[in-house]
Image 1 (cartoon, rainbow over the protein chains, first blue to last red):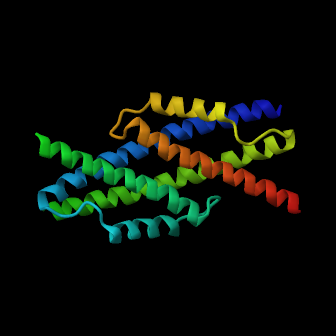
Image 2 (cartoon, chains in turn purple, blue; image 1 turned 120 degrees about the vertical axis):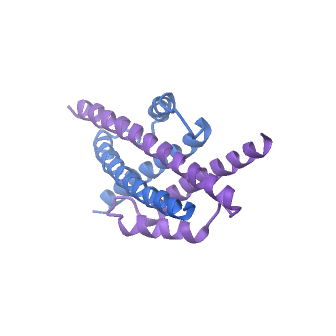
Image 3 (cartoon, chains in turn yellow, blue; image 1 turned 135 degrees about the vertical axis):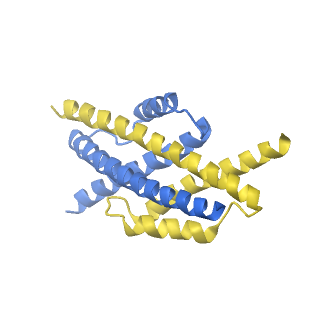
Length: 96
Length: 96
């Protein structure tokens, strides 16, 4: 019985993982578009004030079970990955 | 013009962040339920074979822009947070 329930829960988690993947990549594409605009404007990709604002908004909406510190850590990794994407695009644009 | 577009993109990213938050917390609740079953069964929370399978499925579905290594890193952080949640619940159950 509990093994059936485990399988059910795991199937739900697999589905959630794929939804997360989709959103993370969608976020990546938006971040790339922002990077192109910033590149054209000659402004820095990294914007600590904007990161702070994003985090504040996220944490305001947190109703658990994850704690603030854990979510902060996960989202900082997601932000960093976005920044790296912009920097990669910038380097590739210079090489063309 | 491009500043308007930047604001638009940022609003979309804020929305995506909140969707990510919702899914990550939803995932946390499922992981907690799995933890309770495992606790009752006396099996280990950490299951490297299952983690490998989850990652394989995620990476199979990746169509970018993020690279495999980046997604692996982000998802490992999400998995680790889930494991910590199970371990916290276990400790709390022992203290009751």
